[in-house]
Structures are given as structure tokens and as C-alpha cells.
Image (cartoon, rainbow, N blue to C red; front, side):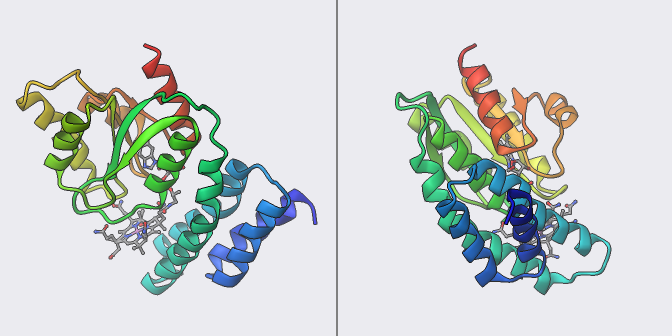
Length: 216
Ligand code: B12
């Protein structure tokens, strides 16, 4: 089987909600020592994106969305430890507080970003999903973090990213942390509008951006 065929199978397994097949394919990727970034982004993630698109078109309903997400989780449970093991940098590149903002339970993308950052030498404090906005500022202060990374997947919860920046302003903490924002509805324009330090559209881009910002 060619690499392209495997990637296509990965996508299909998520779209069809076939958990067993998804897990088998994730293990195949490890056995074949495939590039895990490519496996995640071009294989499995393109599957969950297709699920979202079918849901938007009204062809899929909530149960299919949930099954797709469960497959993604099962796959990431297999791949995430390996991604993190392949630590590229040993010396800490900086400390990052990351989470999905209040009211939003989507955490697949956030977990992916956290794993990639960790694999690239950043120290990660993962607050999880549906995180109270004050918790981001409090943890960042307590941990003396370099970055606050805010994930939001809903147009309604994107506002939480703006509010965290406002909270920092109110507490005279503007500029103390670099704020990165991301998530499907987020874009560079939104990041600029709310005064974030950066936006990245995927996990690898987030690593590049964090490295660039830490080097000043
Ligand atoms: C899986 C999924 C779910 C799962 C989530 C499971 C989980 N544990 O995460 C479940 C089924 C639970 C779910 C629930 C809901 N969902 Co949903 N879901 C999705 C779906 C299909 C995929 C999201 C995903 O995991 N993508 C794969 C990951 C890898 O991509 P990603 O999250 O975008 O992350 C990447 C980048 O954005 C970036 N990134 C992410 N975070 C960050 C942070 C930083 C700092 C940086 C730099 C980068 C970055 O890097 C990541 C890796 O490449 C999307 C469709 C879509 N187009 O996104 C809908 C979607 C997000 N969901 C949607 C909705 C409406 C809901 C529900 C409200 C449905 C309902 N009626 O109950 C609930 C929300 C409940 C809540 N309060 O949060 C809508 C949102 C619409 C909108 N505009 O607001 C979407 C867009 C579907 C659609 N097409 O309409 N969902």
C-alpha cells in the first residue's frame, strides 16, 4: 500500500466512524515509521474536517459528529505519546499555558497543538477544555509563563479570547505574556483585531510561530 493510499484510508476511517480501523491505521503508521505530522494532518484531521463539512451540509447528524470525535481521540491516544517522545529539542524553549476557552469543549486541536509544542521543547501546562477565563491569567502569573495559548472552535467562544486579553489589560499584565490564538473560526484578522501576538492555522505553524516569538 502506498503512503497516499494509507492517508486516504485514515481519512475514510474517521469519516465512516470506524474506530477499530482508525486504531489499526494509527498503529500501521507507527510500524512503518511514517511522518506523524503528515499522518495526523493529511490523514486523520482531514477526516474529521470532512465530518464537520458533512454535518454542515445536513448529511451527518450529532451522533456521527460524536463518533468521528471518538475515533480521533482513539487515534490520538496512540499517536500523542509517540509525537511527544520524538522530542526534537531538549532544552526548554519556554513555558506555555494552553487551554480551550470557557463554554467550549472542543479539545482535539488544542491537544494536537500542545503535543507538537511539547515535542519541540516547550514546557506545557495544559488547563484542558472549557477553562474559566480568569484561570488562564492566574495560571500564567503563577507559573511565570512565556505564552498563553487560547483555543476556540465556536464563533461564540472566540469572544473568550478577546476577554482574556482584556483581563490582562485590567490587571496591568499587558505585554507580560505572548498571546497566541487559534481554532477553526479564528483567523489572522481576528488575532489582529483583538490584539493577540499571533495566530496559527495548525499545530506545526503554531510551533514555528512560538519559536519565532520566543527568539524576539
Ligand atoms: C469534533 C467536533 C466536535 C466534538 C468535539 C470533541 C472534542 N473532544 O474535541 C463534539 C461532538 C463533542 C462537538 C460538539 C459540538 N460542536 Co463541534 N465540531 C467538531 C468538528 C467536526 C471537528 C473539530 C476538530 O476536532 N477538528 C480537528 C482539529 C485537529 O482541528 P482544530 O480544532 O481546528 O485545531 C487545529 C487548528 O485550528 C489549530 N488550533 C486549534 N487550537 C489552537 C490554539 C492555538 C493557540 C493555535 C495557535 C492553533 C490552534 O491547530 C489545530 C491542529 O492543526 C468541527 C468542524 C470543524 N470544521 O472544525 C465541529 C464544530 C467546531 N462544532 C460545531 C458545533 C456547533 C458544536 C456543538 C455546539 C454542537 C451541538 N449542537 O451540541 C457542540 C459544542 C459544545 C460546546 N459547548 O463546546 C460547529 C461550530 C460552528 C460555529 N461556527 O460556531 C463546527 C464548526 C461544525 C460545523 N461545521 O458547523 N464537536
